[in-house]
Amino acid sequence: MFRHRVLPEATVTIDELATTSGAPVGYSVEELARKVGMSPRNIRAHQARRLLPPPVRRGRAALYDDSHVRRLDAILALQRQGFNLVSIEAMLGVRASDDAPDGLTAMLQRLTADRPALAHALTRHGVIGRTTDGTVRTVRPRPLRAALDLHRVRVGTVPALQTLSEVLDSLRPVADELVAAVTARLLTLAPELVRSDARSSWADLDRETLLLTQGVVNVLTEAFRLAVENQSEAHIAELLENHLDADVCLEDSTVIDNG
Image (cartoon, rainbow, N blue to C red; front, side, top):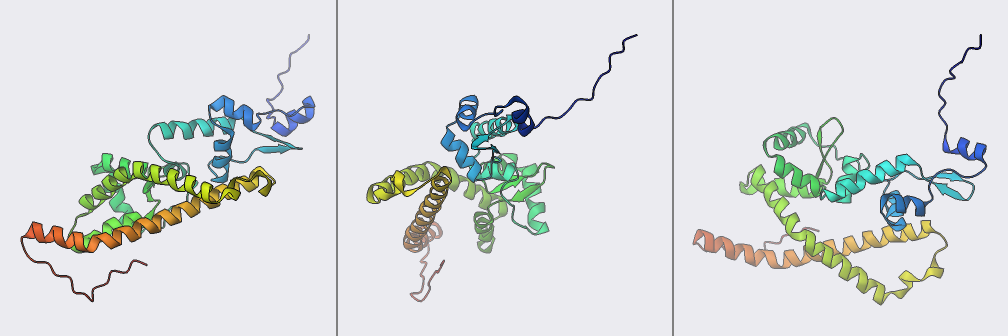
């Protein structure tokens, strides 16, 4: 009697499929872009940020598979919910968290339980994140610490973090406009930035994009900080004076130096 034997299921990699079929198997970056509804440039940018694993190299072909499709679908879903790339890096485990003291971690856990809307807003702005086991962690410690330092003037934790969240909400559209304007101005003043003969590969373009991004961030950060420092001292003294109905005098020797 003939007996049908069931062979164990085999796991076949892209390399094995390419070898057995004689042709590369997978998606090119253009095919992947069409499949997920994203530009090839954005896919490469996600790769540069380590949000997306690199493709499998097969000769001169760079091939993506369904795991890349799932990761990009997850990124797009989070972006539609309002999360920025910094937040998504934290949520997907790409951006390393700050080693926060146990007390701060416990405070963030309580905040998430007691004020979920506030915690969600801080997550959306990339200030805090959540690990796969639900633990809240610090992603961007500097703005968090700046807000919590307001306890020195008797501002509680929740009002301080609420203020931080509202400031970030207000600055987001302004930041969009400034980044676009400054980048456009730099491209006008330094046309060599867009010369195609100055780079030899997509890797060079990705590296220049990251460097330009960091440069724009640094310029805008320091310029905004300087503008705020130039305006804050007199305005805050005036506001306190009006609110307290008393004279507030800052001595000429008082200098606020934030670097």
